[in-house]
Image: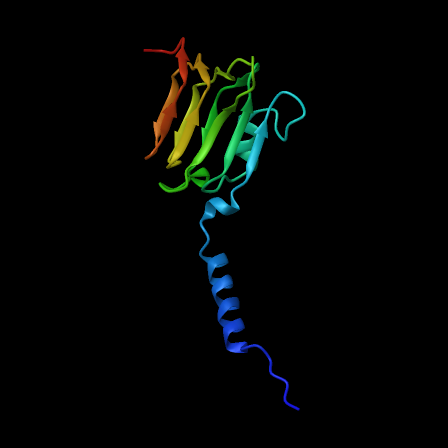
Length: 151
């Protein structure tokens, strides 16, 4: 009696293809989401998150509204995204909640060679030098209100 097994070369080809797909998968599939808020979140200040975490392409930072956060936020080069997979820092929108406020500091928020970052949904106010200071490429500032900043 002869027992036939499925074509093992076909199974090997499938395994190799699956492994290759995992290796070449876009970084956005591996992206993380971080939360910032006054209570019950991973971080209470955006600046604290950025000091402790190196953001990767595709990562998302969601910041609760109805709160004011300290300025002097620096998004550094090790927090960069890519053109295809930017880092996103955005308001975590909830019905009836006002946008988060970044307030104060020398530069309220500074993009320091942190390329391909989307900054969305905030109110930025009161930097003594600049409210939004950009030294990066591919920075997108969307739906942001800027108030009380030096001219």
